[in-house]
Image (cartoon, rainbow, N blue to C red; front, side, top):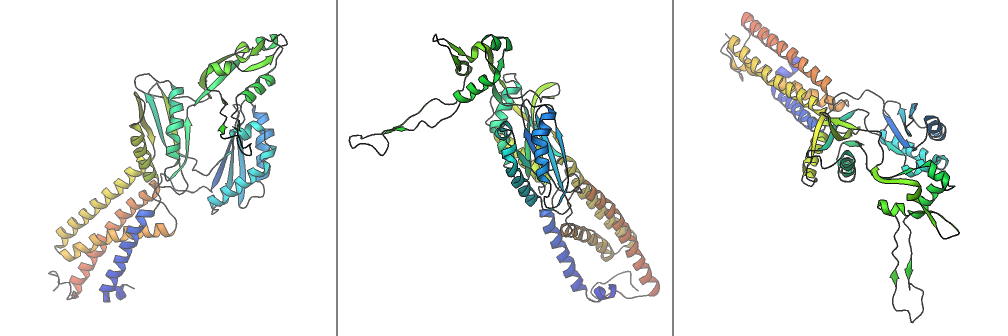
Length: 437
């Protein structure tokens, strides 16, 4: 094989150029991550049942969904976690090689089959199906520098104006808010409720009935009399928006004309939808967004897109609100890539220097100098072919390979020069050598 390429140097150069081209094209499409994907694909199902205990969650939600997952194509195992705060997480793991997109569709279809058996509160909250990586790519958050906004106000602003923007970015699998949105809180006094001879089901039913968006219809719409020359839509106040409006909800109308309103039995305030999650940065209140990478996303590109989007949104933030990125795993990958490039340049420089100083021949100096980049480009092409990604482990392997390749190139070329000098072998006429006899 060696004699074949020695006798055909042009063909060898063509092969080398194809290797360089293939490696250059592979670098642009290779996924970049902190660690390689060695775990089988998994789909995460999330649901919420406010106020339910872990046992109620397991009986009414978790077990129902788990039983329906049995029989899915490529299913390996199912694990679940039901928390006492009313949240449930079910991880459906499939066999290696399973297409995660098709697996997510299968899971969605199976959840649709059992939706009618789930509690109404769970259906209203929504059952989410995510196929993002389990590890977190980065944390993006915001804090008030002047104290004008509390964590509830910051969380509500991020949930309405930032989270959805991040979710739409390429490479983002999921963005989870570590904070809370604003919500109307109704704190019912059980003693007052008993004094008015009411119960919680009546309070809940009254809120649901009197805080609803309804279609009131129109006046004078077709078919109508010929004398009717106009029509107009009827606009009514549906969903309530303030504490005063919620306080006026009627719980019961007495025979003497008096009314029992919600404010008579409860304390109302505009607070957070949930107080289960809180975050702090350097001891100060902070609201964070956990960004998870998609299964096929590029870590570096995704992190850069998130930062660019946050820079764009920062222009429209309220006064005193500033974002920061306290945690970003893509920095480790970036540093690894920079170290590989640095090692490559150092290796090429050392090879050139050592070969030229000791052999005093520019031809023998150029041969190993050119071989190192060609070998690395071939490695990137092979990584793309076999489905590998650029991560800290592959970068570590490349650093080791560069060192071995440089040492072998120096030893081989020096030994070839020694044999040619000792045995009096001529050099090719295309490559004149001052060292040849």
